Image (cartoon, rainbow, N blue to C red; front, side, top):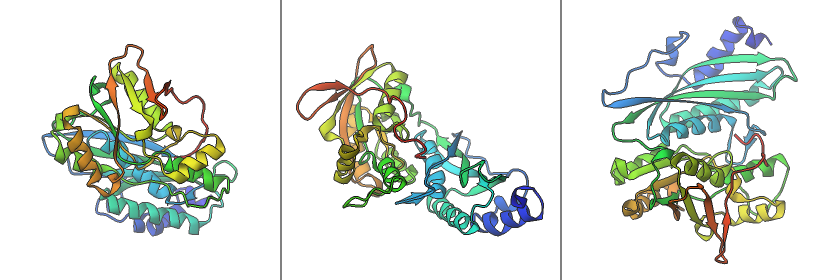
Length: 333
């Protein structure tokens, strides 16, 4: 508990663990906040905040530290923003091993450096044993959106094309497998990754106003995210189930457990809705990036006063792809 009391032990933890891992000129200012360079005059500031309570803290393909960076960077990226800075707030449970905390912080620092987005300020609190669950992390991200980038769920238009950057359900199934000690013939890895490079590649290939919607399908998966966009835009969608990429091991695990991969979380995938005339260029741009090699065209936006998302099955029938009801897999991010 001394590590959360604000005295010598707190200062030592911040300096020797967090300060060393996240070292950069802004963090080194050592004040209650960081004084940061402003973006250029033709950019808008974008800010987002994300809490991370994933259980377990370590999983195939990542951990809570890298996930905290990727999740917040991606929230900025799908706004069309260039991620600039992160803050990090740690809620630690009394008795949590410092060696495990160091693994998390080192992973978070590595993800931050790889993304080129420094952690410039933070906070640390400790709660009594039994009042937390190891580590919770809240991150805030600040980014700059260049003029002309106005991606929003409200901008979807009838006739637009719906694309995804890769396979669905990897993160959710990876978390479930390790949480429930499930063993599969093929390992299932989380897709956790920072998407701002993929978004930049898309904008380099298309006129900015041709990209209408960007979204990362996290909690609730692809199905819920598409319903959110349909509600925002006041339109509907027609999606082709056979065109949606899903890894065979994820599909097999879902069949075994009675789950639908379209409702499982993703942490490194992108939904793109763009003008039909630019769909081929968008698909090529996505596939040309390492994070978009499995990109696919999965459907279209249609006029529909009911805002329904319809799914065309492989047998040729149609069914409703409704909102997620309940939470089949809590604490996945």
